[in-house]
Length: 255
Image: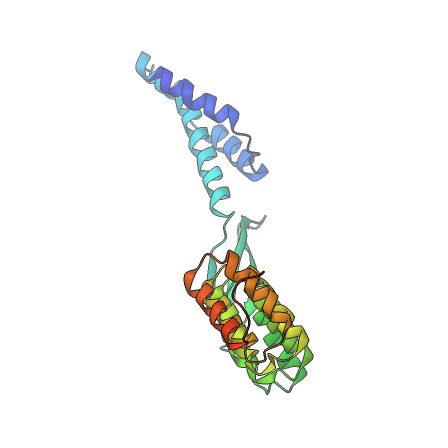
């Protein structure tokens, strides 16, 4: 038992936690109010009494340390405001004040519902922000699905092309390709499609890029398709490139 106590104390010595000032004051007051024992304690009781303050201090330190750890990842709490609107709150800290009350620090966010047409500049800006939300794949998919009918906007086109090049989720890239179907003849779109065809890691996305590029055939595609046939590891993508070359009356290999 002594060795276990020593191990506990070594662990506590290595733990550097600054006790709150009010805790030290309360401990001192408790010690001054404590009454000494009237009878002579046994050796075992003397041993227990010697370690009891240390054990109490250990429990206090461990409790305080656990509380600190627990508050590092604050849990969101759903509350309702007096007006009935949903309020999403995160508890950041709790501490007592001088009057004996408890002070709770909250970060609050109120949810609002905004309705409007995509022709509204504010609605469009919010939709573009949603399409770039890195933490929510589903939100990006839904946003691009709604934006695909508004490619007349330069900002929407840029957002679709950026998603097609950079979004890590293939489902989002598929949605961007679908939204760009009617723009496959535009130079900036064809440039991005060529990049996707040569660099995207998803075979389905590459095949879709081939289909869009071959809607408007041009001689500049021949060399790129021939190179892809030579290096493409996916057999279906390679066959699709060969078919596109045949439709363009071009040879499959390079000479």
